[in-house]
Length: 159
Image (cartoon, rainbow, N blue to C red; front, side, top):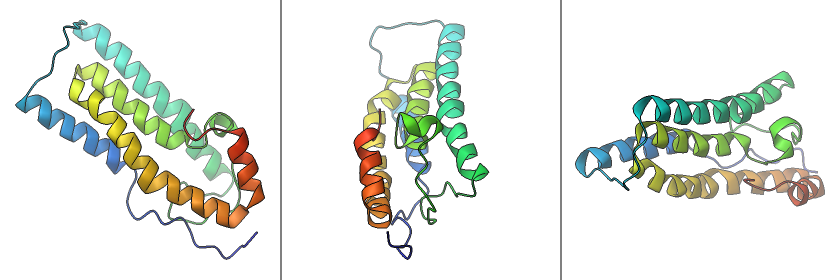
């Protein structure tokens, strides 16, 4: 293991991607609303979409950040990583914070009945994978070698 490997080459704030997805979806919906004939009442869709987004945020995002901070690790991808976290949500996904961002987009789309956000969410997931996840994985493989490769074999990138 090379302790002098630089941090991942992530040069932006990853939560910006889902924020852009939501903003563009809102803009497109105001210009050209989409409807697939699915009508769910306002209170129900707010509750279901909101609960989905909040659960994703807490059980994936917040839990992952708490684990990092509790053990002196920084959640920012441009900071160096002292070890590979494999507890909590990291047991089922290598990227709980990024998965949380995608699931929040789905929850917001459902709560607002904005199908544009839902349609743009896979584009956001792809952007997160290409611009954040792949550089992070390269960094982790360079720094931790076989330890990271073994973790990669055991835990999937998304789910």
